Length: 118
Length: 118
DNA sequence: CGGTATCCTTAACGATACTG
DNA sequence: CAGTATCGTTAAGGATACCG
Image (cartoon, rainbow over all chains, first blue to last red; front, side, top):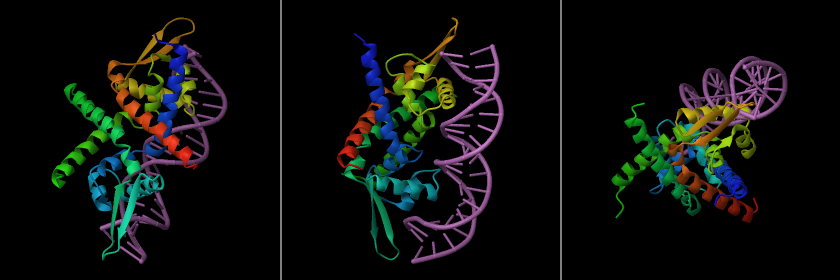
């Protein structure tokens, strides 16, 4: 049943789609940020605490990128001191299935690593 | 129904799982390679043609990484000239759901970009 | 608190030339 | 064909200091 030509076309399509996704979701931290905002809005400092390893500079840079791409929304409450929070837009929430499958694979992968005591 | 504490625990778990996945699948090209091998084994030069933008150096480096992580298998047929091909291991194939959701998001994202004529 | 500016180091990556 | 070696450039990222 398998057809080399059709496979090739499908393959190229998948690669292109993966490429398009990576343009926006690529980089070490974007997926982490989506995961952090998974259950609702959070403040800058909360996200910073959530994601161990990220620096403030990178977090603000990535947040800005994602805001430009309309994945997240930044809101400022002009209290004293100022409170800034971020949340996923409806469009940003469409990434959930990706995060979910990635997280699922990641936790299964960790199990595998543990059991083969690497 | 939503519980801030439970959300926080779930969130941290997701972030950790995403992190574990990224350790192995991170980088600009690994997902492309999985997509390229999606429908069966391929030769080095075929993968190189599939993935536009990747250089030979990066391809061989990424392939080696993935072989070490047991995601792909490299086989050499000692004909003249030598033929080397790569294919996903059973373990590597467990990444399919991730690729699928990523590709799905990517193609929808492209549609969105086109329709908002960015 | 939520950043930006500056400096610095390392890693990623590409191009080219070369080899078995 | 399937790479490796070498060189050079750009990007990623951290540390620290500073600002409204």
